[in-house]
Image (tube, rainbow, N blue to C red):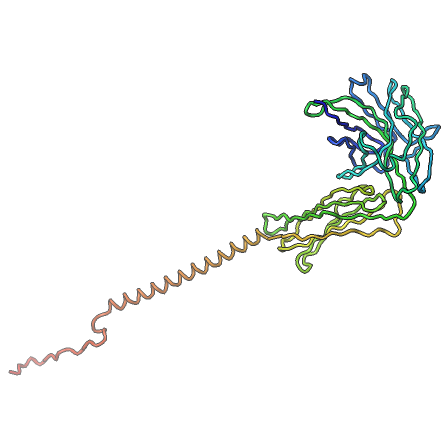
Length: 381
């Protein structure tokens, strides 16, 4: 069985790595992408290891730019160059094309798979040819044009120019697949107009996990999706706040900083807060503050987005301990009451026994008088 699949490998300039099985390129974006990235096709396709790099260039060669960065008006047209360098010891024929960028759910900078048609900045780039052949140990500076549509929306548009080499491979199940080894350079285009830097929290889910130790609190875990609903690429800083009824035991914790999120992109993040007392009903507030990417200046600073959710936090260990203490108290009182009852009953029995052993003279109604005795020795008769 043959699968029509494309697994992209090694977009170093885009700062991405393979993300099977959807042919996507996924990984966090570095602040300064490297100048080149090398990949090695399978020996069946290339007896010698093939390596190449892609970088912004000029007619005379690369000029040190880490990415194609532009700020243009709607309808503007420009010409630029992409340098494709063959580091191998033999000529290479590579596919050369532009595509749109997306944000993966884990926060990586990714490009559409080779078979997907771009609709944004990737479709605004025109290259003179689809394939290029580069001699061994050589560089080819390829011109291209970027045409901004007159109706282009203001804000940031991201994509990349890719040089790829397709190879045959197998997936973990042994099926034959097409493996697309890609290297590329990023495109960051800002179309002039009103900027709206906005991050929105969606789908907030909160749970409380209790501790078996009744003297310690449990853990509140908040999972939510952060979506870039504006038109500016942004990073973010999440914060989780938790409070009990009437604001009791209020506290907050700062989560891990969010990587770059492109306009229209989203990612899911989780923030945990340990040591939360189980106050039956907790209120959790998730907040994310937009953060500028790179040397951007956001003036005025964008507003933070907040979402709220309630969660039950029943103190089962504490209730069990309280029930055990109550049972022990009741049992102790019952035991003492039984001991007291037995002591009273024993005292009564002892009293009855003492009364039964007393002489008849001591009994009520008995005549204690004795008959008279003549001690003179005379006989009255």
